[in-house]
Image (cartoon, rainbow, N blue to C red; front, top):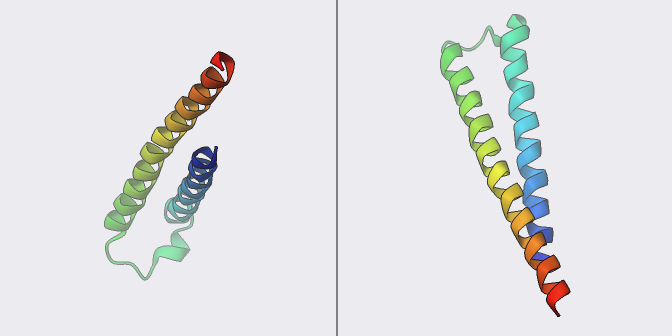
Length: 80
């Protein structure tokens, strides 16, 4: 069960990464006052989208692993 606990901790970390990058993206999209110092706005936005996509992809994988490990534990518990 420790493995599942580690996966759940990783899930929390990845969810926070998505929220963090999404909040920054919202600033670039909605609050033009905050982006005056950046010359390559599209590059920054692309980087934030890449961060979100990577975290979401990892999050989907971790969620699947949690489901797999949880169902293995339940199956193993019933057959014993």
